[in-house]
Image (cartoon, rainbow, N blue to C red):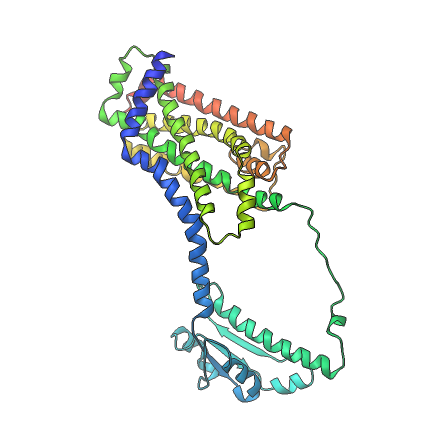
Length: 397
């Protein structure tokens, strides 16, 4: 035990001296997550607002078929109307960006309106990367115009508008706000935890395995009084510690981001902070610990197997997708924690975290998740031990 402690402290000090490791452990989670939580909604909102308020050039084709509708568009804000675009050149004009959209009014428009027949209007636009702002703005304008016509018809026919609303549906969702927010937010928490646990453990694992091979310092540790098991456990402890610390930094970054987010209403922020209490976070972190053990042992095994640091990076890099993809499954609506999903590694963490944050976790399923994670961790640690005891792996290359 004493030798494991010595090796652990020695490797920990070396890792702390590495600025790259400290960046991915502390600065990256604390800076990136608040930037994502605060900046991303602001960016989307800013782009959306810009698209919904920018000046549009709209061609009206068949303006004589409905002077009233044409006048309605003229009075709309931030819309420039042009009249001299032939119908057969609408598409080319939109592609060449001479106009943003076109409204084609059918020849029988006024006659259809008078006879209470749905009047045909064609909207032409190019919507691919503008968040459908063109379609939304034109549709909103036409819906307003349609509502004016509807009110006129109700008055002409002496009808009550409410008579055409046959159902009065009242929604009564007995789920609390905490439960709703917990289900929504709880699915993304493990995604953040697992991502930063992986990143936090990756660089120490690369350095303590393939890195030492390249520096020719692994042989020095092997000839020390410590056994190979003690050396491996010391290194493994450092990798796992960094994985857990990185997850905690990710949580701290999330907390800071939510606290300074101006896009979230105060009531929503209050509910989130009530969910992220010490008991909830502690329970979720008990799920992260076996994951950190699993990732630490797996990454260290692959790093020890690799000939060089570069080879280790090429082997470990694709694992990022294999680890993150199952955690995203927990965010899919309808996927619940059952006896089957509780036995699927990584997926069970995502689903269990969602239930824990929402306060709806079932103890038997939580126990099954723990057992699955512990079995997975034990298996990966066994693999690391076997790998470190093979001469052809240690001195490979």
